[in-house]
Length: 199
Image (cartoon, one colour):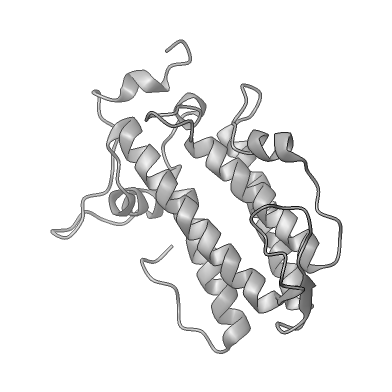
């Protein structure tokens, strides 16, 4: 993943490229974490890196269903469960599911007009009652916004776990050489205990 999205030729490509760049940022934030660390809430809140990946997967699937006229799934309890990485989840599996959901979103967008109306689901408290429809374009912008917001959450949680920050993680994950500008992240003995399953 380069530090910036590549040049784009048109609006559809721009929306998908910038969405993918934010997805990649989430993936980078998980680099080098054990399953135990990915389940760790490293602050007073309950957010975990693994839980955020799980939520983003469900969020993309839900919006892709809405965009393509399929019923949205879930209830309030299921929504809250999206944010929890269970003991049976592995970070690798969650990332694979996220990549599959992203591929489904991209395939749906490739086959639909950006101006196509997307009816606003009813009964969700944060959706407007006075708007009949959004557009596919609006949904993609919302996906970029939502993914970027949670990528920021994941950054904060990750730094609280082991001190790792985004650009050194990106350099390590992508195999960039060390430079005066940037030293790739490497685990330190100070933070290794979090990787054990009995902590």
